[in-house]
Length: 203
Ligand code: SF4
Ligand code: SF4
Picture 1 (cartoon, rainbow, N blue to C red):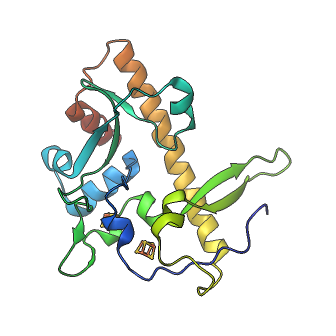
Picture 2 (tube, helix red, strand yellow):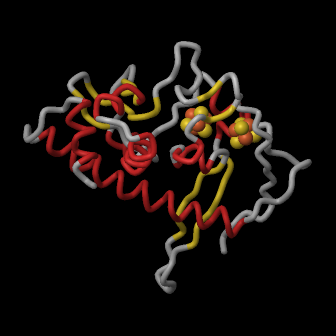
């Protein structure tokens, strides 16, 4: 496997990935449905827990192509869909009293894989593609569980998770492509509610 065998990490539950002001937890439609079903939320309640983050400057097509989760077209312009943040910058679902995630079992793929990211290495001769795993930039910046003092990661476990997440991301990106094209062709009103309704209808 084309995999880095020297990744050392153990989550020490410092909470930095939930508290960091500059971290946006993006959500795929699979994440949204998992949270919606786990917490039994209505459309209005889902709209309450999500943020539609606008760009200061509209990204170019090539920038969008490089994004792990592309933005969606809304009535206000292009937006990233992610978990809402509290005014102090921490994740909406971070429980300050208990110092932990209040939706741990339903948390998004972003949180499940932090501080790692994955890329696919296509291999025409094999049935299944290899996956490469890296620390994310944010992980390197502030994750306190990365370092020589920690054990080597269980690669099998992480690669399995990487495959699941890549599958979700690719299904999600298909949905976003369809959504953006329907908006462009004026087939749908690009409201946040309609986007969530589209996700609900996938079940
Ligand atoms: S969903 Fe949970 S794990 Fe993810 S950032 Fe929010 S509080 Fe942290
Ligand atoms: S920043 Fe790293 S060590 Fe801290 S809670 Fe997040 S994953 Fe765990």
